[in-house]
Image 1 (tube, rainbow over the protein chains, first blue to last red):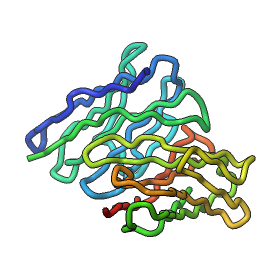
Image 2: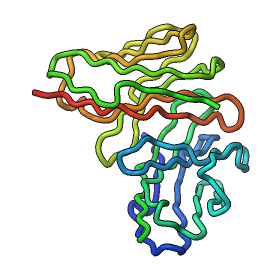
Image 3: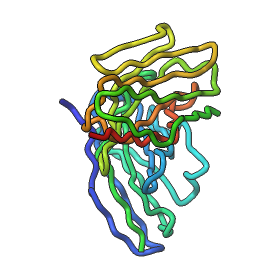
Image 4: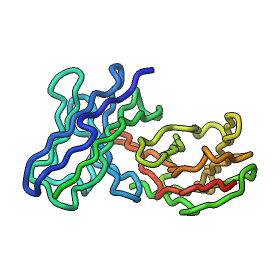
Length: 113
Length: 113
């Protein structure tokens, strides 16, 4: 069964450093998302990406965040200057179309120290 | 934007009993309602979804009901088993943009022996 894959599974970084979280969505999917989940809390929307551009972003997704789809398979989330409060599990998700199942990757646990 | 409320936040049942989790949404244009199960440290996984053209959908021990007039939908698990213990999230889409899913706050279900 096809699945969304994310790397790394765990990233520890110093405050102020840049991190890039990587995702490979399912190949025939058209919609891509990043969500984050602070420990013990709900899954929060960060950004959606469709047709090679951001289609929507939340208030969490400020100027420190950016996304890219550099080739036909990868979808990355960059945080330019990490803060302690960026520590969370980051999930990538993809969907084939509107109102279809969103498949989640296994997540990247980001720890900012 | 979409506001999704979920109740209860925690639910404890005896093995074999039924569990019901309820969600309400605000966007009357929403037409796709998934339920995700998240085990500790793992990704959210779709367990059942319903579209607005039906009022109920069942898959073995799991069912979802939808009341579009009242703007609420519920997850029903019958004959609960210990492996049903997890956090359950409802979600609803918001039209436009990337058709993002807005998640409820989650329900910690504990099935006791």
